[in-house]
Amino acid sequence: MIQVEGLTKIFQDKKRGQVIAVNNIDFRCQGGEIFGLLGPNGAGKTTTLRILATMMVPTKGRARVNGYDVVKEANRVRKEIGFLSGETGLYDRFTPRETVKFFGKINGLKEEIIEKRRKEIFHNLDMEDFQDIRVEKLSTGMKQKLSIARSIIHDPPVLILDEPTVGLDLITARTVMEYVKRFKEEGKCVIFSTHIMREAEKLCDVIAIIHQGKIIVQGTLEEIKKKFVSEDLEEIFFNLIRREKAIDELEKY
Image (tube, rainbow, N blue to C red; front, side, top):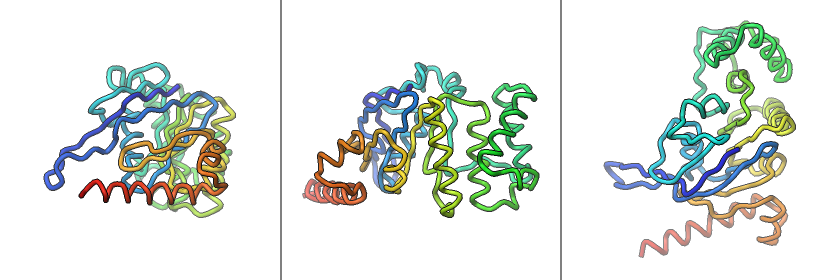
């Protein structure tokens, strides 16, 4: 459902000059699969996901979502995806019920369909107790649940989740992770960005580790553990990033 080939994004910075945020990356994600994109802050995860969500245009390369080109057919791509990012896009004066209804209408859903979907999602995410409280009064966890609800009200086949559990307490994070598993069971294609290795181990079918815009390793969890002769993904991740940083330092001289 997602095909990425040679994807590159270059920014021009007044102080640093040319900055390569995403550097010639390739990957695929199928329906019923969770693809984990792992990396430290600034590695290029969010830029990659923003390109897939049509919020940025790549400098080079191409990406297709459910058969549609993210540049040439951006409007069609937006109908195929649910995108969750750190910027929630929530309006403080709306309630969760009003928020979901608003985004359902934006996506062209009929009112009865919106209401049916809303009830199901609010029940599954344990949102019923705060569905009529204004967003400005909600906790971080409540807002994150609402952001997820907003992203999936139109039942998209592709989900792009940028660190969906960041800042959440353990119980709320667990609820979110269980819901991500449900997406997979429903046959959806899920891109899951995180820097929490335990989440990746529990959820992801395929993992790609990205550093300074480059994918430095990609494969199933079993393949990666076998390749680096370790059962500890966090240790593998740490050693890989440390190695890449050392190489970067050597290349400066």
